[in-house]
Length: 340
Image (cartoon, rainbow, N blue to C red; front, side, top):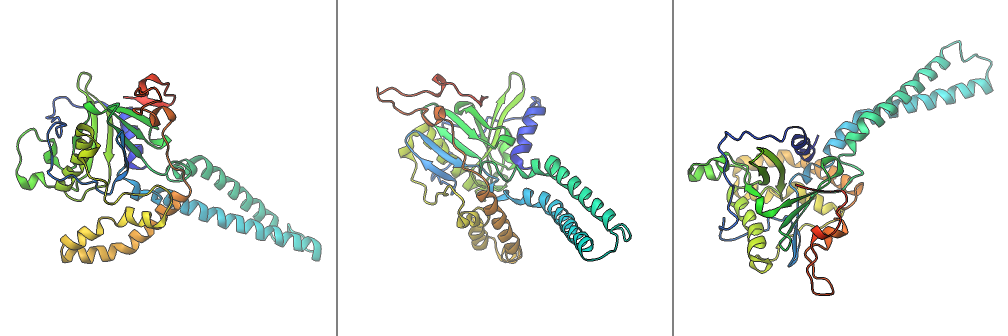
């Protein structure tokens, strides 16, 4: 099960949070978290109305589907081959010799092979295919849209991970993946810079002590300092306007392009090689063949999936119509869209 499905399952089955634990409000919406914001190679599109960014676990796409399909498809192939060979052998005996197919057990072998083939196909359809559809034959990615006019965050998940969800920007709590981010007390500079710079947005209803939403935004920035600069890019866009942030220097492309699959997997390699030291040089050299296979599986998953698109009411939310009025997403019917 992928991370998005795990989060959706957890929010559905046990959304309760322990209100006795120390919790912070996260990084403030009205204070700068960094002097120089970065787009973190995570921005698809930036307009005056909305900012489209990617999710954080796209590099793992294709691995689960390949793992769960490998052995079942191998067994199905063996049984199918054995059945075809047995059918050809029995047909040859019936037409070219007088030997009975029942004397050496050929007919029994054919029945067993076909029975195993039908059973494996049934198991594949009922058990394996639903897991494979998490990676294949679904939407290509998690698409997150920050609309500064409607003050909403629209999350386009795969259907298996909850579908389209709408959150209020003003209620979002932003934090990073280091333990110091959850501490209500001041921490040292060393503790504040732990972690991989993963930006996390959550929505917590403290009145009922329940978690309403949780998303990982953009790629892992690599360090906590870069994670805060990535948050500053989003915060400044939403609070100060599109002109307050620079155009994304490196923006990901939508579509099934092999070089984008390589970028998804290898995008942290340059920083690790430049700043990691000899240990990282050796480690990355050993991991490169495995990551190349991951990039290939990611590209295969992209080829077998479709690009996510928001429904018209979300696409037009915050835009100006012909009469000069702002279109609000709340004034249109949002079928299949969950608001939290």
